[in-house]
Image (cartoon, rainbow, N blue to C red):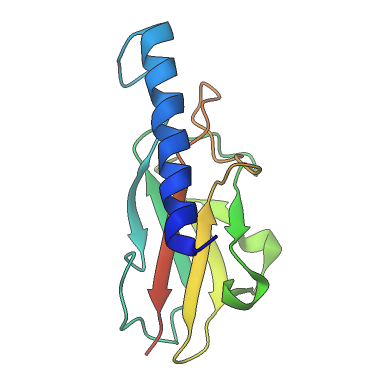
Length: 139
C-alpha cells in the first residue's frame, strides 16, 4: 500500500468515526475530537533548516498534558532522531506539544500524529485527536 493510499484510508476512517460521534452526541466543538491546527515545520515544507531542533504540533482544543502523546513512525528511516525523551512536553497553552529532535540535511521526514494503533494525543475529555500525517524535507 502506498503512503498516499494509506493516508486516504486513514482519512476515510477518521471521517467515519467523526460521523458516528456526531450522530451519537450531536455536533459541537466539545463532543468532536481535536484536530491539528498547526505544525512547525509546516506539512509539505521542502526548505526546513536541518538546524531545526523542535517539532511542534498545535491542536484545536486543550489536551491531556500528562505525558499523553503519540508521535508515531511511518518507518524507522523517515522518523527523526529524538534527542531527549524527557524533553517531550506541552507548552503552557495546553494545546502545543513539542518533540526535541536532531534532523539531517536533504532528508524527508514522515511522522504520524496519532495513528490507528496509537492515539494518546487526547483532549481533556478523552477524545483522541484525528490522525494527522506530517511530511517535510530539510534543505
